[in-house]
Length: 151
Length: 151
Image (cartoon, rainbow over all chains, first blue to last red; front, top):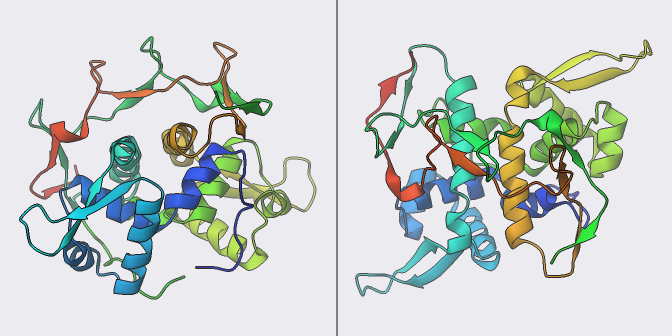
């Protein structure tokens, strides 16, 4: 890791999340977990990441309540890493990363692996982030407020 | 940066995006850009990041088409970094990071800085990612498909 770090206990919720998973390997581990990867060796082969880095990232994600480490479902001595409920709420994050990449990080004609929407059988359409009343939110319709306390 | 890296030209759109901005500083630079930060010195003071790291991250983000580097709007000799149209599409990403942090990275009673929804004047409600027909998408309703070519 690089030397400098954000201040501890920042009041910015973006920074709190980024402190836990603002790292390419952590994000790709979460992606793989959504795709059904559970074991250390599977993550390691998929990502081509050094074992010590993978160990550290898995430990951080378990500590932050994103992954749960549990005995393998087949009764073997392996351990498996599965998304917690809080971890499953990161689906939106992985989808935003994917949709931006699909729109801006490929050339026409380049091959890519789509995420298929089980409802339509087609690649997932461009999603929109909406309020509870169904209206979309734009960046320029928001601003930072005064600090307040969490309920 | 750490030694290992994902394979170049992966067909995974998540990995393509993560290769550009899967890094805490890049994500916090984009957050600050949405909050109106434009100048090198402002980013540097806000983030408390080393200048050489900030320079490298800004260069990557400009190269990836997320930020545009342009002469300062006040006619001074400074340069300013502003989000491109593609960069502004990362608002969803910053909001997902924020909403996960608000839900999972604070203790009750802890102080945080809310994002105010200009429409309601209240902290932004929990958003939902929906298809064009307004229906929400769940992780277990999707799966990876066979590789295909970008149009």
